[in-house]
Image (cartoon, rainbow, N blue to C red; front, side, top):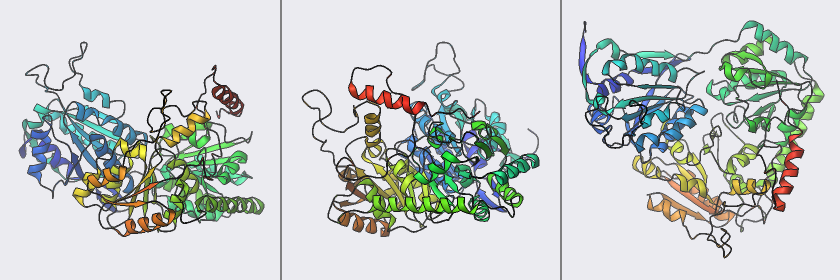
Length: 627
């Protein structure tokens, strides 16, 4: 090559390149790849591992993980907390280390959150065939297990020659920083190529700033939307995750205040407005509030902002029942902007909402509609308070009462993380969000085991703030190993384990669809062969303690209040363990306010399934195709 060059291995060049990538937003630059997570094996120890060692922590900070999937979750938690302006890279060996990335990659891509994956790969030069952990595919010699990552990655490339990195690395950065197309990005790195030296042009290592685009909505689309909203009698805004990614919370709040239009939120969008904002009506859909769902059922114009319109949001297409309902979709992704038959407003959420606010200047919804929304909101708050309130401080708390006690202790600084089980439904319905980033529920992929590693990522992105990982026993058993990482890094995350002896959420769903809770309880076998015996004698608190956490046990509501208070003040990783009372014996949270389509057996001999099918067919008749 002509010009100044630097002789480095491919792995050394990649790390040097990543250390010089930045994003720019609102006049502020952010480091794009803030750190690298890694578990080393023969596929990356002499390549990326050596390169990280040589670069040093100033050039590329390193975090030692315990599980490859969990490392991706930590990186995703970091990316979400930084509004996608910064993320982490994750490196693994070939074989099982690489395939363990697939679930985390799918979660990142489904949620449109950036993460860079650097799995080792088999030899490009094939000096021996097969090598350790190589997948042999009879019809394709160039396929490895890393190809499993193709469908769950927004960008995939295999660096079979050093010079291929010169175009692949910038391509990867452009996808990571694209608001409309971001997700998991994979650069598969054959282990021999990682260690191969090459003369790299100095230009490759220059500082690069990737401007995060905020495209404006087409003026004609904007004018149409303004006319629709001005003519609406019962308008509703549905705030999705795109509001948070675009940092559009303030302008959304201003638009709602100016016009009086109520704002409901998806799981990803909850917190776009604080719970006490006059126009906030809470979560929408199957896990939503009665307030939001009633307003959705009669809405005539619905503005979706940054939402993918999933089945939980639309109650499997049964929620919006006004025969004349029209949808407007403000979304940076055209693929999402056309959903539910909506009129597209393709553009950035913050830019689009600001322009829409200007176009609606002077307009306000009818006073009786605004007053009706306020009455519904107040009535729901009474139901929340009832679900939160224990009858006595000396009883075992329900799951909703655990949230109620936590509600009395937190401020806007606290961040709550959850992803799976019955907690997302209770949180979406009940939690009183106090700040724009307090509510961190991953429900795009709803991945069990996300919470603890994500809490680590969030704690790294928001040092000094209390970070809570709320997990049921089923989720905890899926992926507790990153507790060791929190202890190693002295990150004072707070893990709340709610012990209910099984998969409570799926157990309830099983009951509803005629499955009779089959295979959902953590119990010994009964004489009839079912899992209907005594609860298993597992001690998850002891397990957390064995991994290095400080553990506080809570038997009663009074104990729980004290334990949560201690955990919040703690400067070391702390676990609060509580056995919850089941809704079978005490009043639980309000039930689902809208349907969710889980098909029921069309023919069966057991009464429970026959009855469930009859109920299913009744709900199906309410489904609408919004075209």
